[in-house]
Length: 196
Image 1: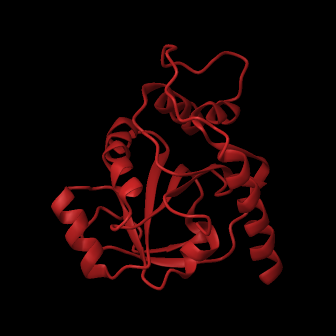
Image 2: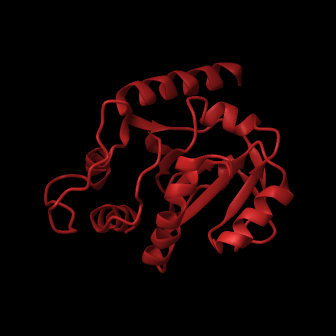
C-alpha cells in the first residue's frame, strides 16, 4: 500500500509541476466538443493535467456530511464507478476554495440527469464547522469529511483546492490544483461528453 501511495504522490508532483504552467483563461469558442478530439484531451484546455493513463486511487473512506444530499453515507475509493466524478478537496478557511464553490454548485445543476456527480471532501475540519459553512452558503452538492486530513494529505498534498476528474471506472484521468470556474459552458460540454 505504501508503494501505491508513493506512486500516486509521484503522479501528483508531476501534476502540480505541469499544471503550474497553465492559464485558467476562458476560451471564446462555442460550447461544443471539437470533432475528432477526445473529451478527455480537451480537459487540458481548461488547465487540467491529463494523466498518461487512468490512475487507480489508493484505498480510503470518508463519511458524508449529514446536511447535504449525499446518497452514499460512507464513501470509499471503490465507490467511484458508473459515473464521471468531479472529486474536489477543499476547506472552509481557504479563499480559493470558497471562490470556486458557487461554480461547482452551478455545475451540479447543469449536469443533472447525466452520469456525473460531484464529491467534495473537506480536509482537516470538524463536522460542525463544515455543516455551518455549507448551510449558510446554501450548497447542496454532496460533501464528505476528512477531519484528520489523512485523505487530503494523500490527494491534495500540494495545496487546496485540488480537483480530479474520475472516469466511469473510478480512475483519475485528469487533475488540477487551484481554483477555477466550473460552470464554463465549454467545460460543461466536455463533461457531458465524458458522461455519455
